[in-house]
Figure 1 (cartoon, helix red, strand yellow):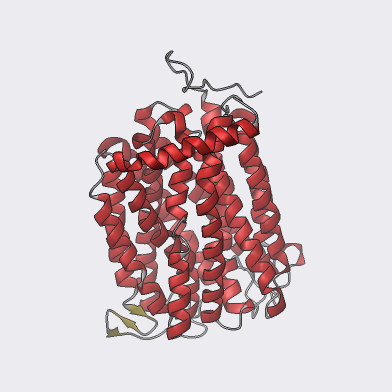
Figure 2: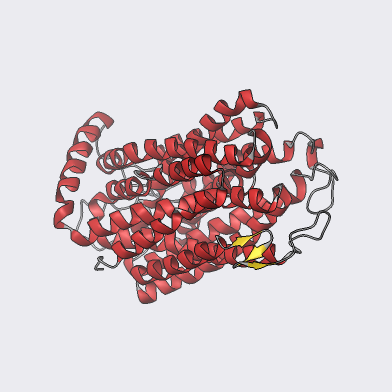
Amino acid sequence: MTTIAPDVRMTSTPRTYPPRAAIVSWIFFDWAAQPYFTLITTFVFAPYFASSVAPNPAAGQSLWGFAMAAAGLAIALLSPVLGAIADAAGRRKPWIAGFGAVLVLASCTLWIGKPGDYAIIPTLLTAVALASVGAEFATVFNNAMMPTLVPPERIGRLSGTGWATGYIGGIVSLVIVLGLLAANPETGRTLLGVTPLFGLDPVTHQGDRAAGPLTGLWFIIFVTPMFLFTPDYPARRPLHEALREGLWELKQSIKGLPKQKSLAAFLLANMIYTDGLVSLFAFGGIYAAGTFGWHTIQIGTFGIMLAIAGAFGAWLGGKLDDRLGPKRVIAGSMLILLLSLAAILLVDKDAIFFIKVAPPQAGAPLFSSAAERAYLVLGCLIGAAGGPLQAASRTLLIHLAPHDRIAQYFGLFALTGKVTSFVGPLLIGMITAVTASQKAGMAVLVVFFVAGLGLLMRVRE
């Protein structure tokens, strides 16, 4: 039975922390939620949608960008409000359960996305947007539980371990899809050289489409320990009272931001660099599909390599976070992302940094061309930097924000991470549509990292 965590807002007695099982169970939320980002928005379903469901890859990238923009706008508008209500009401788990259900149902809907079926595109994009809303809102309330789990000096390690565990979960789910479910339509074999389980049809890409239901089932199984063993805040007041008090506190917090210059600068920086990072991850697989003609096997293998790099980066970043501070980890991660992105834009299927190389050949071994290998190396650098950037960001917020309104500030954190999150996908979608060039669309992300790094320099821990 779950014990109730002490309400740090109501007592000045020394804080006690829950047992190890509660902490491990909380960490597994990241494992439970990661397949949505790994399988659906990055390495399996998004590239499949762009290359096989949409009329062409450029149109697919554009449509996907508009759907992600709509989801980002909804998250931006509602997350701080919901966070403020949750702070006033006290409990976090009911919110995680409700938005988790949205994630599960919307993800399962993606199974209906048959290749070349243009009529189903609006339904698929709606489902993807709803799944994004569910995943992001559930994460807001899960993050808000962190200060009650470990002492302040261990927050960085907890956050980094959570992100690393999530990356490992993404790797395992990706191996399952690539090795056992999704097959090459030409050979009928998966990455492990076997026929797909359950008789999934390679021609109609049932293995790629199965990523949706697998994401939903995965979340249900692995989020359950958190509900069983991780303590929640106690209930404080009915929902209607929490709504009134939460909105008033949110208004006061927003009005007070100009007086909290470091916190305001950090939230603004987070708004910009998170938009760039999310857009980079969301369109990385689509970009590779269009540049090199990669399909699910190649993109999924690439995803496994990125996830391994990300898990290592998040784990190392968590240790550096406690030792050097989250701001330095964020700044270093952004520099790596900026340089790697700039380099990727100079890699094409037949050129690396303007030097001509042999393009990929049909039937050649996996990643046999020099350009593909260069893309792999740069992608792994991005994966290794992305984990520490996100983990250290939520750690820095905990250092800067009042703990009695932590869910509200995680709502503002999500707000700044999402209020302009439609801008990145929208700009990529618009520029790609106008220029018919995926490279031109991706180039806009350089600006996001430069601006985010500049604003971060104004933050004082």
